[in-house]
Length: 73
Image (cartoon, rainbow, N blue to C red; front, side, top):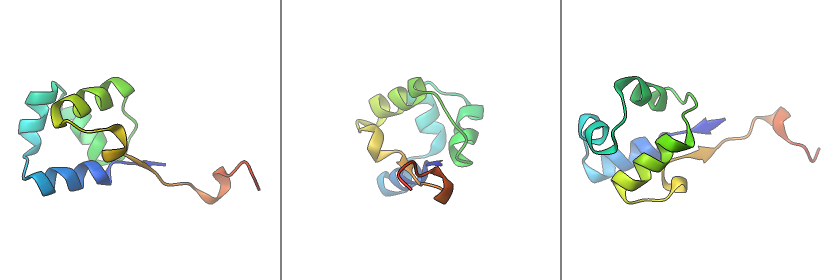
């Protein structure tokens, strides 16, 4: 599962409002809702957020493996 908790934390740490990020990144309210619920968004969205926030993708997202996802077991 992809989690956007790091993105949420970044907004809090930088004191940013979601509406400001929407405008600066050029993303929609629907996309922000997806980020809030850990739904998938395109790499284009991640790219826009990284440009607006001057960060790397790993600063916004993290992978949380499900136990059945491991190919090595």
